[in-house]
Length: 393
Image (cartoon, rainbow, N blue to C red; front, side, top):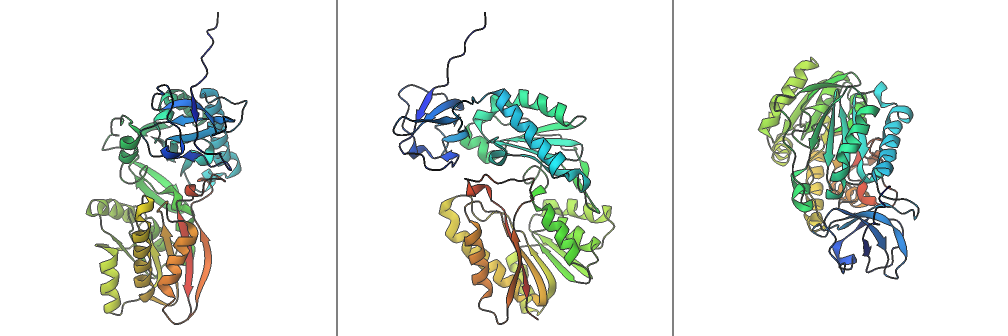
């Protein structure tokens, strides 16, 4: 006799749900009359008692409710999550056909793939699985088995971001072996990557399209790559035929990995350690110029309370970069601050350059590649913003 499972507990909102935004902060949720354990799958009702769907509930997190499905006939279980995992893999493999260009890309992108709190990056022969929600943790074993069938012959590393672990109450997994290192390809470039170590999952897959574009723009230009990390933009620029490439990063510990990537690709890059703001001020005072400047700084804002200060930093950084950009030169400016939306970021860039004479042309504005799909109702999933500008001759 099959034991019938009890339905998930109910969580009720204080508001009438408008649209399909998948995140609800704690203040929008009524305190349950009975204990609902953190990380539970719950049925969700609005303030009037109308059934909305199911999601993950964690009262200790600021965003306490993360919707998984709005369909009344759908249950949050391993079967549903496995189907979405399969759809995510098919998108990258059969639609985007990313393997023709690279073996380093995002295989699962959280809310964008209907799998909140789950990120999977394919880095060469290793899959890095990052869990960010307590509610997703009980499904990891089953999803991991399914993932091995969908993407066979790949090793797997499980990681949890320190901030997410603290907020959600996740038990961090053991760290990956320190000597774990793989090579990934991206167009003509080759990079050494340490899966699950350093920033993000070990490699910035989200900037692939911008790196390839930088390589196309670089021919014959003097290139400055600021906040270069492991040298992705610098390598592509050098391989693209740049006249010279200068790269800078504040983190001394990452510079040996950047040098290793320069050697691996047999390119000549002048690598410096230092602060991007200080470097640009000194360069401007010395009258130095570059024909292609790349600004890809770390996030200046993690929460809404940091937005004002972040916008001021973006304005300052872009103003300094514009000073050292030669006439006819190109600037790639990026922001990975989630609470700084596309319009606000573009406004910061515009404010930075409007005090200079001459026309600033916007050649393109975008973000992460299509392996980082956006949730249509959740603007926050567009965390990466980028804009290409040209300075009038």
